[in-house]
Length: 455
Image (cartoon, rainbow, N blue to C red):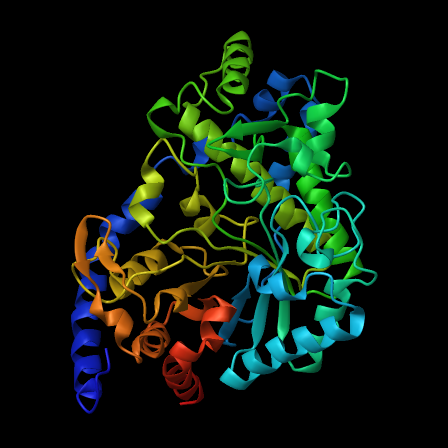
């Protein structure tokens, strides 16, 4: 990393060391990718039969035709604009909101970015007029209440006027969080599909929404849930000139040591019985859960491309690449997404650690591993960058309580961009979050990033 005049020498030295590491490590990483990729989709129809729903609905998703990707020559330079970045705009009138987002987008463009990832569905809601979801509390101040205008329509216009791409960022399964609503369904709008499923007189849909860890989630194993999420994506692509659809890292929660018996385990038991009756070997519960997510990802990809092949779909999982092999949390099948056609256009692992080698997942070495997993040449690799950690006291890692002083180095984010550009397989980055780029305490960091982008 840069600390002054020594930066060029250190950059060259690190690049040499990292290149040797990449060459030495490629074989093992690729061998891991080829293990068990096919198991995730072979029994999709059986899963649907276990619910007693349309057996053809998800099996059709497995034959999606992939549309050729757009050119990967253009570097992607984006900023996440999260739901809480709209705290100050709740309930604004139209003209005030235009000015508010205009200032945000001016700041983003001034840094040298070319895209914004705007949170339009954070909690089973919408920052636009939706047929399926209620208005977001971050639009009007109260979920289910219209602000009197369409925020997404305004944001698309304002972004494009500044030469910025705009990508609609959605959390597919999250209904509430422990810090935002908890499990009290009455805090949801009566128009919220989660509240409707939980409070109507029918019992057949009682498990479409699950309570876990002081939060509510849509049940990933239910085909009606997938249909809802896909419909919510389709209406955005059909009605707004967005450049992309974006999911982040909220899929299954961490289910802990009781993962085999909690959350959607009852649906898994039904699936196993159906598989046995059909004379087929059932997937493990971990593979079954990965398959549930894969069915959604593939369905979203197909829906997006069927409406507009130029609209991209990508996902930003956590950057901790080894943890996705664990059986009790998240169920992110990144290997399939990055190797097979018809899942994603790009992946953006959140590489929220410094270069410090004491980290479990040091920034550049981890980027190299993610790049090596991208065996489908049409899947682009971006890196999520942690501006939110800058000038804050952060530990080197969860296992090492030593303060990571690199987050006080104002060159850190700029250096991350520098090394992304040195990696031929990486083609861009997304910075988290907007508010951290414009904080006064981070002014020097942002200026260094701007200089690096323009170099």
